[in-house]
Length: 432
Image (cartoon, rainbow, N blue to C red):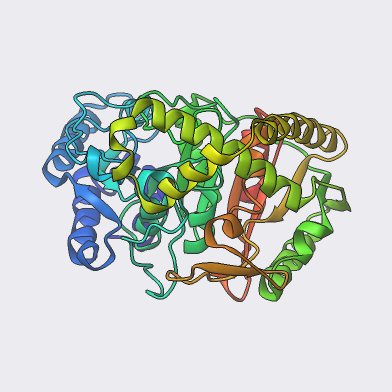
């Protein structure tokens, strides 16, 4: 098999259309990779090899007939286990949902199948998507590192070469954080841009679902198919804003990678300007209050008899939320509105906003705290520090490693655009 076929979704899709490789051959190749290494890495919870090969063979028949092909025809993908996938246990990582085998696909999986993608299986989620560690998954590059979460299984599967596309969900950074930890690319779309029907909620007012892949061009192909968008005309990005305060708190190698990104933009004629984003301590406090109260309200209302079976971190947060004063939540909601307006206002003067994805480089799997600007922070709240705001504001954000950075696992940046501006930030990401 040509080397590019198994590294690039764009190359694989083109090869299938040119009949240089069949969908069944490509599917078999990735299933063999999964069989060889998933036992060690644990990125996929369930694999459906027979079903995948059957779907690929059916697609090959259409190709031989000369039928018109959908945009993702033959693309091997995996889906996070909180997204209902017909006939496969989709527990969202929760023990009390281990027997949940949906009889129909979630809306996002239905769109994948309609676009011709071949679903190989479901990827491991951090239990209930509450944290950013995904402890059941081993990092493909270094077992001492975390794969991030909660879409850690999807990012690890991509990094390990198990698939060419994946689906993740993001409530505080759960697509972007594992992408940063694994050196892959992930898009959190605008709030509501892709359907959440059939996905186990974490916080319904913050939950997003989106595509993950190994490159920005591959994420673009997935996004266009899932959103029903056609490739548009080129956007002329002239100005990108960044807040030095969001960069200065990061570790040195993260700062160095960010500087490299600024230099690359300058080489392409893009002007970078300093802007003032919401203060990070206020962002984290707002996120914590809103997230805890809304998560507790939803889960205790819908699964009150299973609270003891939630992960320890969730039960702790439920207790904190019950003790929280109403004024704190009301204040957090007001801050969410104000911060959303602030990002909207910033995006009237620049075409996009750029920030690091993580403050820390190569976070360890077993760490209980991370150090940010000389201060220890809870592992989860430390890792969501730069990502969580854009779940509240609903702006699209893509995370990707800076090319040619010395350490891809310490170089991830996120590009943030106006709501509905996915095409713009995807094009900008691809420029890198």
